[in-house]
Amino acid sequence: MHVTYLDSINKANDWKAKHGRLFVLHLSIPLMIQYLSESMSSHFVLYAMAIKLLHCPRSTDEIELGELLLNRYCEQAAIIYDDKSIEILSLHAHLHLAEQVRTHNGFAFTSAFAFESCIRFIKKKAHGSKNLATQIAYWTNLTCMMHPNKTELPTTTGLNQIDLLHTSIDPFRQVLVNLLVDKQQQQKIKLFKRYKKFFITYHSILYDQRFSCASYIISFESDQQETDYGNVILFLSYHEQYFVFVQLYERTKKLLSQYVTIPDEINNTLNDLYPLVRLTNNYSIISVDKIKHKCIRTQFEDAFCISEDRVDFEHD
Image 1 (cartoon, rainbow, N blue to C red):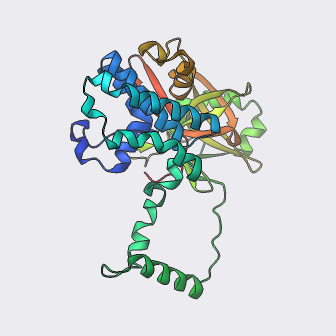
Image 2 (cartoon, rainbow, N blue to C red):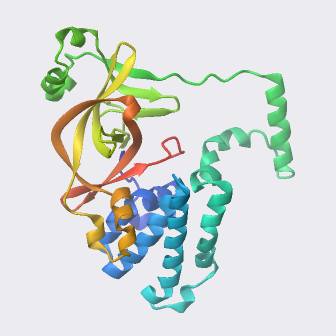
Image 3 (cartoon, helix red, strand yellow):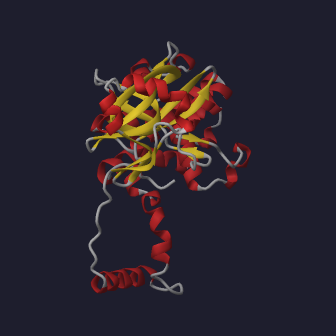
């Protein structure tokens, strides 16, 4: 995703919870490294990495690493800021976050954010200010008994079909035609500006109603089983199979770990979570099954810092 903040960072006190979450998970590390001192940015990196890992951990190893980072973050806080009074309850509470994740799963699945989309629906089930939980449970149960409709999962499908000769495809048409070598294949192919996979909708650069936020930046699995990144130009359908036409990013020789002083054993994790990339003039067509996540891109000097949004369907 490429996100335009409508609220200045100077108004951070007015941000909603989703703004703070987006900032910590995806934007804070590349920004803080550029504007804070090396000692402070290095200390903050420990915190942001830990929250990123515990937000949606992929393994028990990531939970253990998140716990290690938070322990180190809390230990160094008073030293970095030369203020022992900073060792307050809210800082100490971070030491228990990893254990909560082991018990209840990642933050993305146990915090209020996972249910934020249901708030309007739930509010209609309660009246007044007494016994709210009982009211909500009662009316929800009654509704389910009276209207036992089965919910059908949305199908995977292309949206906003577009013709190959449409003017918006002009900058990319020749490249696309070259990748589609077989002319007979070109005649049977269908092009789409968006693609919906169950509850997740992916946009393309050519989608013209994306406003200030668009999910056209993706991570995907390469043929070498590594993680690559690209801008979605279009989605293609051929014999009921869907593909993605992408413009590729390449990793730079620079690494974020070169800008901070952190333990050597976590350098690779930092560089994997927040790789520095540049947009190339190389294109490819990949299967939609190779898509891993939507991504968020932040300017970092003369490159971009990419961060995967591991929970694509989270309320934002």
